[in-house]
Length: 497
Ligand SMILES: [Zn+2]
Image (cartoon, rainbow, N blue to C red; front, side):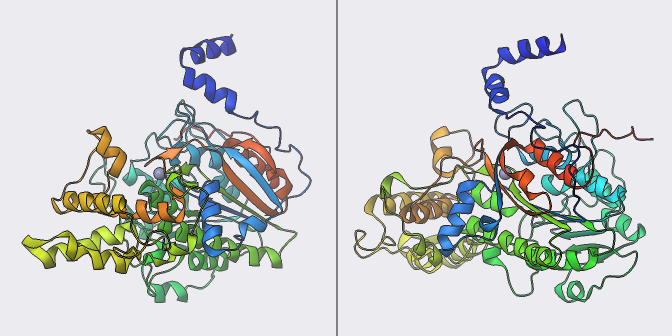
């Protein structure tokens, strides 16, 4: 009866029919009585990291990523309960708890019932728990492991849930609403609450590096430079005084190591943001930074191969990135991407801002040309046939037009569909520069948002073979539960007292 109702409902919307038809049947690959358990569990999530992001990063370096060498490789579907193309909240909830949920929901099922996460299950088993992200630590993906709220934008409540989680290590970006300025019911300051709850807070590299594993230690470590939206800088912009994702991972392993084992989730969150902006190089460099963090875990696995599971996945693809572009046909020239020196974010926040200040009233296109060449390698003279860095006449015209709009401080919003296709919501010149550089290298983009393409999941260690095959993101949680010695199922939490 319930089922018939469900089907009838689904028939109303073609999208939902397509969605359920495309989802592999869950449970098939999780094992109820999996005979082995892993003491140490690593889950790496590349936000926006689909197959093309990984392939582009590998093409950029000319060698396989560490994750490409893992013995188990699977394909994972990502749809949300209410939309084919998911967001990080629904996807994070699926991977953390095994339930399909709705767009924007965190740690709750589609009916808002709180569901237990892998991290909370690990904590109950007596393991230590760590959560690391290159974006703010209260962002959707990390929050999916410790918060249970109807909206991912409840940053203050999420911050307070972080403190209440009692998890042992948080690292990466900062908090988006520590004081509850955007909250309907502010509960004080998140950092102060964390201190009173016994957390040690560090926000510089020296103190961070000096942290030592000691009984009862609980840490919140924030990178000294928060570049945008309380996030760590893009890897391409990282300075020596910043803490890399690999360093956060290494310190987490050091501090979490104990006889009961640990669960550590590490997110490469800015792969997604770079892909929203169609900045291939920033996305590639952040993908490589995540892969370096994976390598830290792999070294740990090599010391404890009978007790460790490492799973690496993406929550969804972003940008509709592909390897190949109409304008370059069968040609690719990934080496030219190495000429890009800054992320799109740093270029528009710093380089372009300074340029505008210096040229004042007479900012003309001729003056920006050397700035473009210095930051992206693109050239205005030469033969485009023999040098892919030389702009074709139509591309120079695109840049000129975009430059005029940038200098007019035009921030294109979605009202005009044609300009949205050109620039999304980004600075017109910056996004045109990354488009042109990416296209000439042979990278194409089709969207400024996520796409519904499945992602790759890679695994090594105890239970890795469960992660072979073609399965849904909810199964990823269930497979992990199997290897934690738990029944692979959605576990509802007791109603809050
Ligand atoms: Zn995104």
